[in-house]
Amino acid sequence: MPARPTSALRRLTLTEGRLFLRDPSALFFALLFPALLLTVLGLVMPWADLPFDETDPELAGVTWITGFTPIMLVLAIATVSFTTFPTLVATYRQRGVLRRMSTTPVPPWKLLVAQVLVNLAALLVACLFALALAVGVLDVGLPAQPATFVLAFVLTVLGTFAIGAVIAAVAPTTSAATGFGMTAYFVSLLLGGVWVPLQVMPEGLRRVAELTPVGAGSQAMTAAWLAQPFPTSSMVVMAVWALVGIPLAARLFRWT
Image (cartoon, rainbow, N blue to C red; front, side, top):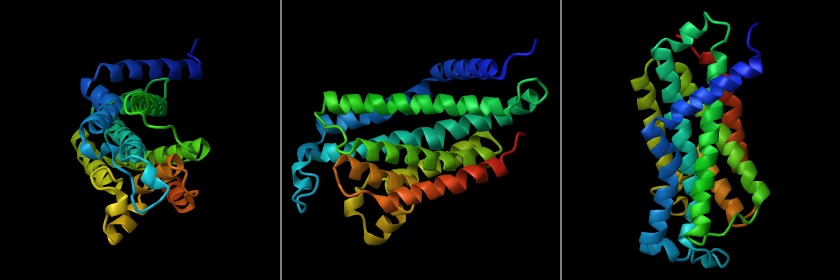
């Protein structure tokens, strides 16, 4: 008797999850790196307790590490979206796993769905771990506008995963996916405000950052965290990236 579709997908997801947990580099960079970096910066850097923006009466009472926490969550999203996910899909393509699965009763798209589920689970664990350390160790407060924060988080995930899916769709080899993904990742660190806060970026660079899913996500999540006005333009930017990128990835995807 053939396996039920939900049963096959569940087994594939569990198998992919076990393989993910056996990869030390994926475990460190996807799950631990954002939380550890945030904690070290908060404990060591002298600017961590300085006012987030002395020129703004409301933000003058917020510490830098509090304003930096949503940016580190965006870093966690970008790590999984641009590096882990596309590299694994390209590896399966290069090794012929997707082609061989096309000859079995289990269609290869279920392997991709299982990969997405595993990476989303890893992303949620990484963000919850970083949030727990921020609140418990660094005394960072929770988002002031939780509903807006959740919406910004979901749109950031969709927008960045859309780019990762396009990379996964067109990269012919593992090395190509790693190259494309790491390029997108390091550019996103700059445009997301990890290296240089968006508030002090040159005007032109800040405008470019606002049009990327990582930069827009960083602004929207920060606004929700610090009780600033609803970030409509950032939400629209991330939604457009998701609506364009995900169908484009589906159209460009190659099994072999």
